[in-house]
Image (tube, rainbow, N blue to C red; front, side):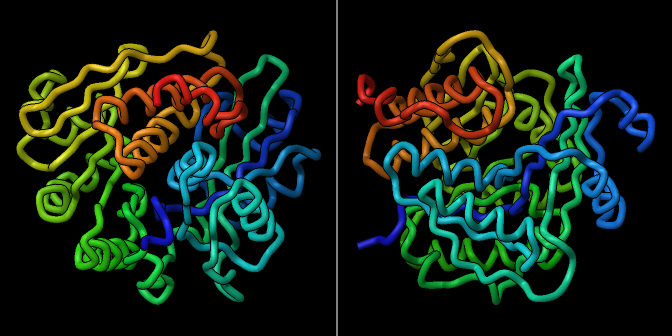
Length: 327
């Protein structure tokens, strides 16, 4: 018997959200509405000057694991934090959401990754992200029994930016495949695709069973201008692909089988953060629960529709209750 439905591997990031005035942006030379990668020293200075706010565990793969658990699935997360304040926040928060997280906090090295989000009175969000120790996942951090005991191992494309993490992902994928389980990859970001296109293509063709990508990512991967052209390519390269298209819904591709899934609106769009992460959560829950791929796509659309109806990247309503009519 498998221990988990989904094991998600990705960057362990703490989101720190606080309300500030415009003077804060001027004082720290921040560009309103931007997202900037910063080093640990600058992140510490910003964090020290931020007023009290909300601190919550984040990161794309971690958000997906939380969504799987919210639907009633058994989920675990593999990521890396330091033994610092934010590392404690991350571990407590993700466990409280029903996700197993057993990687010990590192006693040395860079600090826990954080995304510092300041919100000005005009509701603009300005983000500064320091990846810290999150991208330092090593093969030694991978518990092979946990990987072999998960129906699906879901990997975050962002991890491909560091050589040692590439080796870790490849190792986890091999362990999962040897155990007869499914391997899934999310492309994460079109710029990430541009940086690693050839390696991603090789990985998808050799090791990935279930691919997640949005329209920009999949057209970038195949270097085509039109979504339909990318769809024709991806059907030959992996067993199953979930391709999201924002307000246009999603397309599920499995060989000659193609399903168009409409967007599932639960109200006005408030914040699109986490839409792709929660789509993956719904789809993966459906797959591991034995539903057909069209239903999996509809579950993904429902979970995405829930998360964009409020601020924040994780479910706030009872997803099991919302999903019951579909199942």
